[in-house]
Image 1 (cartoon, one colour):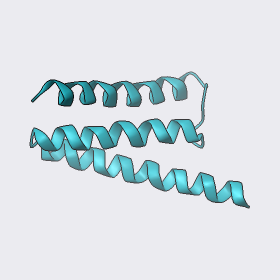
Image 2 (tube, one colour; image 1 turned 90 degrees about the horizontal axis):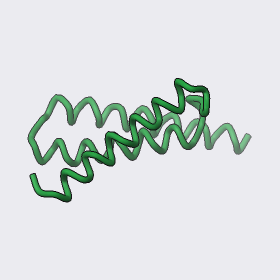
Image 3 (tube, one colour; image 1 turned 120 degrees about the vertical axis):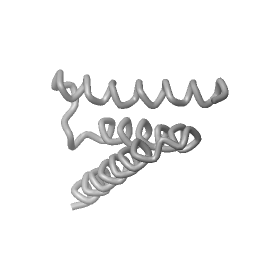
Image 4 (cartoon, one colour; image 1 turned 180 degrees about the horizontal axis):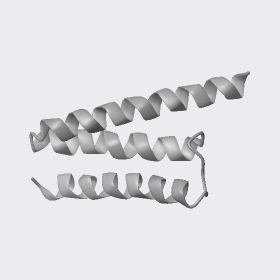
Length: 82
Protein backbone atom coordinates (compact mmCIF):
# COMPACT_ATOMS: atom_id res chain seq x y z
CA UNK A 1 0.00 0.00 0.00
CA UNK A 2 1.45 3.36 -0.92
CA UNK A 3 1.35 6.53 1.15
CA UNK A 4 -1.62 8.03 -0.77
CA UNK A 5 -3.72 4.94 -0.08
CA UNK A 6 -2.72 5.10 3.57
CA UNK A 7 -3.73 8.77 3.80
CA UNK A 8 -7.07 8.06 2.11
CA UNK A 9 -7.71 5.29 4.64
CA UNK A 10 -7.06 7.70 7.50
CA UNK A 11 -9.36 10.31 5.94
CA UNK A 12 -12.07 7.65 5.59
CA UNK A 13 -11.75 6.71 9.24
CA UNK A 14 -11.85 10.35 10.35
CA UNK A 15 -15.00 11.00 8.30
CA UNK A 16 -16.90 8.05 9.75
CA UNK A 17 -15.78 8.67 13.32
CA UNK A 18 -16.60 12.38 13.03
CA UNK A 19 -20.11 11.53 11.81
CA UNK A 20 -20.57 9.09 14.69
CA UNK A 21 -19.24 11.59 17.25
CA UNK A 22 -21.54 14.34 15.96
CA UNK A 23 -24.54 12.03 16.04
CA UNK A 24 -23.83 10.69 19.53
CA UNK A 25 -23.30 14.20 20.90
CA UNK A 26 -26.49 15.50 19.29
CA UNK A 27 -24.67 17.98 17.06
CA UNK A 28 -26.41 16.49 14.00
CA UNK A 29 -29.27 14.09 13.36
CA UNK A 30 -29.43 11.13 11.01
CA UNK A 31 -31.43 13.42 8.72
CA UNK A 32 -28.54 15.89 8.48
CA UNK A 33 -26.83 16.35 5.11
CA UNK A 34 -23.48 16.74 6.87
CA UNK A 35 -23.92 13.41 8.64
CA UNK A 36 -24.77 11.63 5.39
CA UNK A 37 -21.98 13.34 3.41
CA UNK A 38 -19.43 12.28 6.02
CA UNK A 39 -20.67 8.69 5.89
CA UNK A 40 -20.74 8.58 2.09
CA UNK A 41 -17.25 10.06 1.84
CA UNK A 42 -15.74 7.82 4.50
CA UNK A 43 -17.31 4.58 3.33
CA UNK A 44 -16.54 5.32 -0.34
CA UNK A 45 -12.91 5.99 0.46
CA UNK A 46 -12.81 2.74 2.43
CA UNK A 47 -14.26 0.87 -0.55
CA UNK A 48 -11.39 2.18 -2.67
CA UNK A 49 -8.59 1.52 -0.19
CA UNK A 50 -9.90 -1.85 0.95
CA UNK A 51 -10.36 -2.96 -2.66
CA UNK A 52 -6.66 -2.41 -3.20
CA UNK A 53 -5.99 -4.60 -0.17
CA UNK A 54 -8.49 -7.19 -1.47
CA UNK A 55 -10.37 -7.12 1.85
CA UNK A 56 -13.65 -8.10 0.18
CA UNK A 57 -15.91 -8.49 3.25
CA UNK A 58 -14.94 -4.98 4.39
CA UNK A 59 -15.42 -3.67 0.83
CA UNK A 60 -18.94 -5.12 0.78
CA UNK A 61 -19.75 -3.67 4.21
CA UNK A 62 -18.62 -0.19 3.23
CA UNK A 63 -20.26 -0.30 -0.21
CA UNK A 64 -23.60 -1.14 1.42
CA UNK A 65 -22.99 1.54 4.07
CA UNK A 66 -22.37 4.11 1.32
CA UNK A 67 -25.53 3.07 -0.55
CA UNK A 68 -27.64 3.39 2.61
CA UNK A 69 -26.21 6.86 3.30
CA UNK A 70 -26.77 7.88 -0.32
CA UNK A 71 -30.38 6.69 -0.12
CA UNK A 72 -30.87 8.70 3.08
CA UNK A 73 -29.36 11.77 1.42
CA UNK A 74 -31.78 11.49 -1.52
CA UNK A 75 -34.67 11.31 0.96
CA UNK A 76 -33.40 14.46 2.66
CA UNK A 77 -33.26 16.34 -0.64
CA UNK A 78 -36.69 15.03 -1.64
CA UNK A 79 -38.20 16.18 1.67
CA UNK A 80 -36.69 19.66 1.20
CA UNK A 81 -38.36 20.00 -2.20
CA UNK A 82 -41.76 19.17 -0.74
